[in-house]
Length: 288
Image (cartoon, helix red, strand yellow):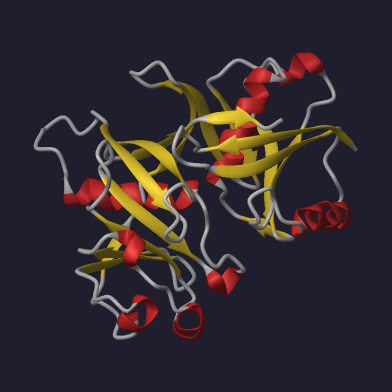
């Protein structure tokens, strides 16, 4: 059933390791029981010691059909669980489609009932990136939770939510994001939302920094999280909304995601935001 496998690194640059993703090309759509067997392949750790991320692409039986604009089905798994939206997996899939299946971009991927546009995005510096688009997220302003001080031992300056009770907290801090010390037990005990912690304090060349925590779902702290970056870009777009009447023009951000306090554990993300969409872009390279 598995035709080929590719080992990639996503959201890396010269200073940050990015996220490891394994892409497996399937010859046919698996049965439900077969999906679970495939999911078990993601229970191992990757080369950086994090839960392994695997993207499965269902290849068309016809090579000619692959080159049409029909979306290719894909699913993502991490630590044995299906991930509903995996930005690293999407970019890895876009790279494989273009570089190994010779499918021209822009194209699209299909995950259950969601269709995700993908394209190649070349930055001004001539570095090739791949990117995907999502609708801009609706955020809700919230009072800072009373338990937030327990989560990180720092007091937030602002808080918003996205989605339902199993969605996201977006919490902004005035301190450097690497100074946060997460209490994972307190997070698990008091909220079902994943937490995107962010700060306007960031190294030169970046607009903001972030860290991502979802211990309730087996991810104590992720290295780089493309979907969370799409949510956070909507937040910073609201905070720094351009003073223009043409809201179709994109606002560009560069975000630096950290994992822990290690300076090279994390990744670099480029984002373009307008009133309706968020494009998330990052560099993809092949591992030896």
